[in-house]
Every structure is written in C-alpha cells, then in structure tokens.
Image (tube, rainbow, N blue to C red; front, top):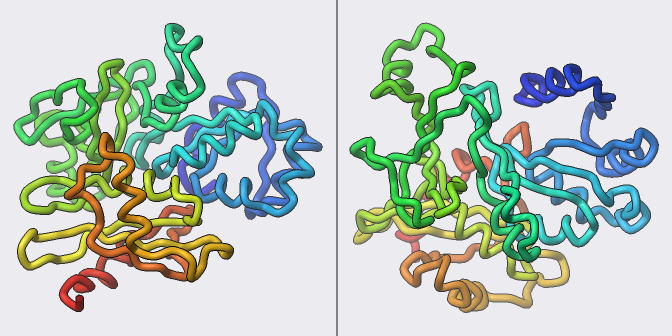
Length: 318
C-alpha cells in the first residue's frame, strides 16, 4: 500500500461501491484462497507477481477460480509469453502505465471497439503495449527536438505529458524540477514508440536503453523475445561498456530447473534470429550469462541499477 496502489485504486473502488480485499504480504497460496473465498474479479500487480502465481505448483487446483479474473499489469512491461499463458487460464490480462510523479495512471491497454472481433494473437499484441491515454491525459512521444514521432511503431522518442494531477515540483530541488518540466511538458524519462492505431509502447527507460554506435537498442524488447524461449524463467538485459561501440547489450538469464546445462549462448542467438521483425541482427546481445537469480526492488521490479555497475566491464574481460 505504500506504493502507487494506495494512490488510485482504493479511491476508484470506493467511488464505484466495490468490495475491496487487502492481502497484506503477498503469498501465492493466500492469493488463490482470497480469489476463491472473496470472489475477487479485478486486481493489479507487477509482472513478477503474476509470474509467481502462474508458476505456483498448486495453480491447477484453482484454475476455475482464476477464469475471468481481470489483472492490470503495471510497474514494468508485460511480457507477451506471460500474457499468453495467463490468457490460456482464462484470465484477462492487460497493461497499465504511470509514474510516481503522475499519481499514478496515464494509460491502459484496452481494446477499441473495432478490435473486439480480432484474433487472439492480434488482441494480445495490443494488451501487452503501454496503451492509450486516459481521459484528461495529453500524452505525446517526442524526439530530441520536441517533435512528435511517426506512428510507425519504430521511431523512438520520450513520453511527455500534461494532465491535471501531475507533480508540480520536486521538494527543494529547483534544478530537477526545471528538467522535469522542460518546454512546459512533464518529461517521464520513458522511451517509447507509437503504432498506427495510436497505442504507445514503452521500449525502455532513458537510463536503461543501450546506446550502441549512436543508435538505441531496446532492452525491454530483447527481454520480451528472450522470455519466449521455453528454457527461460527470468531475464534482464543491460548495457556493458564496449571499446568500439560505446555500449553493447548483455543478457542475464535465469534458467528453468529442467534446462540447466542443456542450453548454450548460441541457442539464444539462434532463438533471437527467428524474430527479425522485432530484433535486428545488430541488437543481439554479445553475451548470454546464466545466473541463479536477478535482484529485485522492494516492489518486485528487476533492479538494473544494481546490475549495470556489476556487469559494466564484462565485455572487456572476454
């Protein structure tokens, strides 16, 4: 409750007269029991929590209670593989987006009416995106000169916003406040693209994007496609220093128990080559490093500020 959950959902739920169920410290088994006994129909969580739920050994005993459960994913990108698995269990899973500074929601990846008859694969492509702005949110994706990017799903830019409920300033930090509101728009620091239907998709944080040879490489896109490999339990992609290109991506992978010692770095290079429409050849990480675990923040996000210093010089050692 100390994070964004307490800023938005309880207010909306109270205004709509909805029953609210507060679980306390998260435990998958307790979550299943609450959904079953309290007849929960709607909830929010980060992808890590959803992953813990879907991988729980007792999930088969609760599948019937999860059918129809709507889950809004925030805090990090919703991997397509995770969405697909949840959908197979009958759950309605889609993305939402916001920041602490936006109190908190800016977009939801709901479908337009014209899309309701689309195939499941086409719908999932929209559900895993960052989504469409909420009413009263004026959201743009702009290049370095402040111009709107093309709606081609390829040109990257920063998300900037205006809305009635945004942070006005940082406490006793005028310089950071000035940067936040440069040009009269609140700068999110999130790098995104916009598709032809107007759906925004975050491809990275400005601080996490890999800058290789003057071009940007989306770590979130790489992570999403790597997660589609059946051997992968978790993955984080970070930039490591490179003498020629400035930075190059490396992938840190937690393997599922059944696949340990059965896959190699080359297996993942070949896997990524199967998705040329998403992963250009020069985006493929220079290294795939198998690790036992990946550090998380207190709210379940992968903690890249811990990983980047640790692996900053890894390419100089090879």
